Image (cartoon, rainbow, N blue to C red; front, side, top):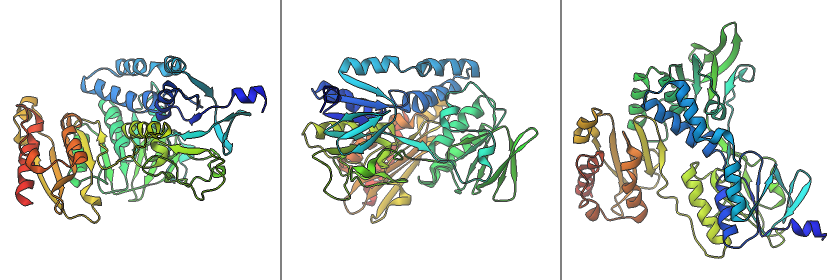
Length: 447
């Protein structure tokens, strides 16, 4: 091995600077030599193209700011897509940043732009990428993914949003609030189709009140340019004329062209890298690793596509790389949508409770004093318990600030707190959190 090659040998190489940034920094602070490979911006999608710009724009919409002011504030929060400060923090922590696309060429070696970097532990944290739906002609008309929608200064006059999941709902509300004529197309019969039915119904009503045209239960079939923009044809025979299509039809783990096949790691283009409870990648066979270990965290695992889940997995990876065994528990990973009203779900959805006998109870937020204070009685909370064990296993809520006042339920599910304790918890008055009390009492009576 040459001196140059020896200099490029690291204890850990991390592919991807989103959740991988946290992993790299923590391992470097613990004394490991670490190289972080990133082809875009250090920090990943969340601070520049996803969580931070979208929540900033939603906040500006609630404050009735102008589009120009909202964009200026968004760009300030995202540091004008400049990762220099974050990169400097990584360097200060002792991390070597390698700019470019990393690909494993054999167990123990990653190549970036023709240069090899050796490792003992490899961490794959490459995130996910938008999925383009199979719509005829969609490549020939003006489209955005969430990346462009959350970084451009444009405000389309007529916008079609494809997808009624969290991203589609948030972006629909953003653009409708600032004056775009928004049409949301979702093949399922309701928004947020994987969650409790009431969640999508309440959110649909909120979006309609803001002027969003919802086309539920129909799919886009073809798109074509017109003299005034584009025309999108739907499966029900109708069409929509617009200036731009915003694609929010889901994401898939970013596993292509990483050289994972050389590592023996089990992965799927749609489901991502298979990992065990320690976030160690599952191997298709136990040979050919040459004493190296592959770990994965974040969206690339396909387990829970949220920044907070990626951060949680990052901590699990760090502990295990350092030899301190830690196992991930995904029973209580929150699923939040930051619209107004906001959505919060955690644990088991009543639509996916296979093998459990659920007991459910709910309460409308209109019954709280806080609803009168806020002059907003939209929303509801439902809790779901496992009859056999007598503990909470799931919850869903839609209402103002739901992402804040539902956190205690996340803890209750994770800790399997007995209902006898939960029903004795006192909530401050007046808060939406008071709505949880009658639901818990009703559940306790049913069990």
